[in-house]
Length: 493
Image (cartoon, rainbow, N blue to C red; front, side):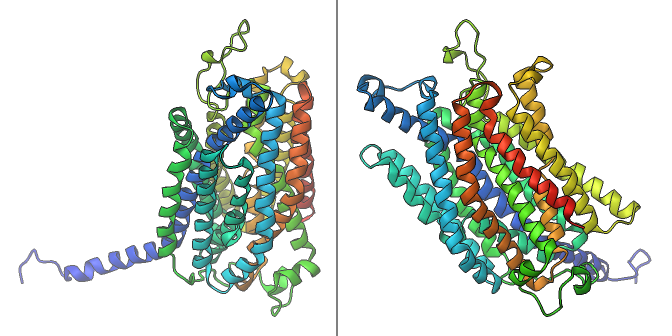
């Protein structure tokens, strides 16, 4: 043997490194696949959101002027400024509200079925069906809008039935969260949820800008570009294991006695009937999600209040307020700005804050989740109220645009609320009930949205007819809903 030859064979030296690499991949495989699936689906959805609103607005605009014997206007390319009048905007809100209402009604009917199917370790099947339902629904909307007025625009509501395949978006989100909860230890669960939410935020930062660029060329371009992304997400779903390996150690979760229910009782529905904490978690989660429904109107609200175009930020001179040629920038960037603050919150502020409390102060992770939820809820109430008051006596101190930016930043600090609340609720459950728990959250959210979405839509439509602070009526209602969430978070112990 040579003097410079190694004492151990190279295979023996590299074996531990290979084992560590395999262990690392096994630990990260499922989370990374969940993140990849989420970013593809969210990118497609966010990229087409504003173009879809603009497409609906243009169709309703042409219909409005045609019905008033102004065919010479309806047959030409109408400037977007002519579509900002209250009657057209109210019709646009109604279309969006009915689509959301129908989506949630069908999802409520099918959620229990697909949730039970997912609980029987067929999660990948439900995810696959759900993605195909989204693809078919979006393709249907594109076809109907393209054929209007040859085909009645109202047939766009058929997409509601197609979107219900697989249980809808909320059930898909619930299943992905359940998969993460299964494979991530309790101390890292909230952080994993933050990472999942961050993939959505990455989409919201970059996708709106790309959607606006494509929309400037052709309004249908971003709608069609989202379809391949949804299809590609099926690859990530196909690689997911059919049964996720449970990595949660018995010491990571609260014991059955600490959770407050017998060891043999694994039904979430039985727990909900008997256990007050679970009722509070569901109510708090529901009301916070309802409050977030107002964000669907955020771009339209800013467009109307600040006189901005949907695709361009108005830099309008006071002498020529109708001159749309002076528009500069991208209105979609307001969504990207909010998402950027959210990303910083999820990837740095909340994880660092939680890790320091757990490591240095020896606070139980579920306890930290609860305190983060309480603080987040307070920011939510404040931010939503300020969004409504963006044109008020406060504008003496700050301009209307600056006040709205401050309100968005404050509201952004509440973004971690639903994620830490879900993590807190999961800590009280045995692993067998995790999927059922997240399905029940999805069903409660769907049921509440059926009531809350029309309420917020009516408040928004009523606000459109008001001036000054009254225009933010929907955001006052949302602040009240988030106030209920705040009360629920403080009632938990």
